[in-house]
Image (tube, rainbow, N blue to C red; front, top):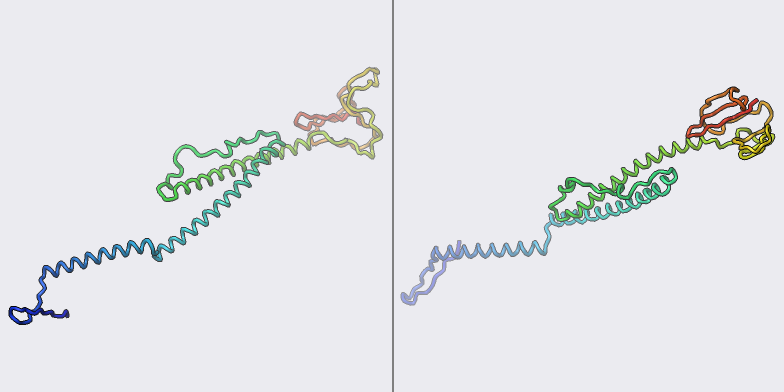
Length: 252
């Protein structure tokens, strides 16, 4: 209960009770509430600028961790781009050069994406530009990987075809060295043994004992094996593909 206050009235020479008017009381209450509100606003303003709430601290730690993870992701993308660039260089300057295939243009490997705005969902944020550029970088990296993967698939096919070509080209001696008596005649101009004139000899003559095994000089399919071709006697023709045909004549 509030204390009762009195004042001394000199006219009546007595103490009178101080009665506070309701209007004045209301003014005091309004002034107090207003002052308290102003003080509260100032406190909140100062606290928000100089003090962090537990929730703000948690959000700040989360943001810091996300920035760290983002930097690590960027470093990984840098490493992936460097490795991919090395593979692309070898693909163009070694693999495709060896297999006589045209290199893939740089514009095709690193082409962007046209048409609609693929990154509209990332707009309107504080770090929109950063997020959009990172996603664009990842998309281009993925496309380069797809292009390189298809290129390596083609290289694998070319390598297999090259292997078949090398195995089919007549490149080995058809007679073992231990069975070979001598090289009777080589490829080129020579004196014809029948008419003694200079003529082009289109083959190589190997002398070996009768019954010596004869080996195909490369992979192929036997087209003919008979003695019905003039000037060749018993002979075999092997089609090696790729425009190569070998003839083994004068077999006994």
